[in-house]
Length: 175
Picture 1 (tube, rainbow, N blue to C red):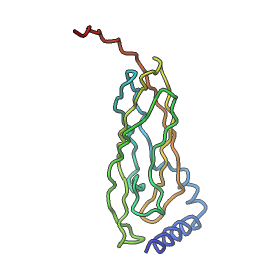
Picture 2 (picture 1 turned 45 degrees about the vertical axis):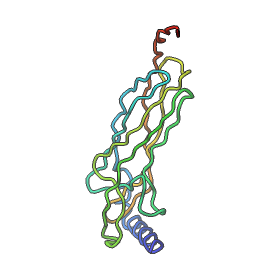
Picture 3 (picture 1 turned 180 degrees about the horizontal axis):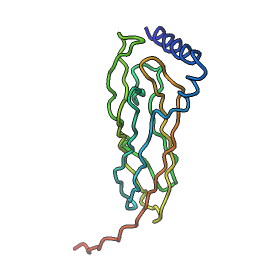
Picture 4 (picture 1 turned 60 degrees about the vertical axis):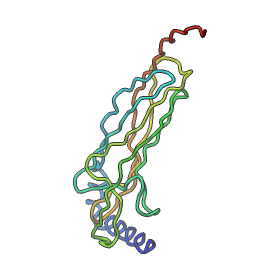
């Protein structure tokens, strides 16, 4: 069944790519997924703060969820390149919606469509220096419509993290 689905997807993709050069050019230029800017994050050294990335999938398209139904499918994934004083943790992708498509109505795939929020925490290590840091990353996905899947894409993600130093607490002597 998996091999049949994989061959069917490949055949569908190949047929759609060969159908028309003009169509392929307009399809490849089309942006199917956009990302909202990630708001600046402020975190105290030794603490964590929540953050969120929101991306939008154009109507008529879908992307595989972070946990696709079969291993042949490309998962949507958010990856970061971090300065040494920061950690990204607790990345929470939403559950995918199980849908079937005309190329195989008996198989349900786990996909995202519309607006998607990925939540995560930004952690500043206890010894982190105060200052402003830029986090670079990318959202990797593969957009599909009801008939074809398009080549995988990566969209850059950048946001600023301001690390502040907390004031030391007053220490009381033990009796």
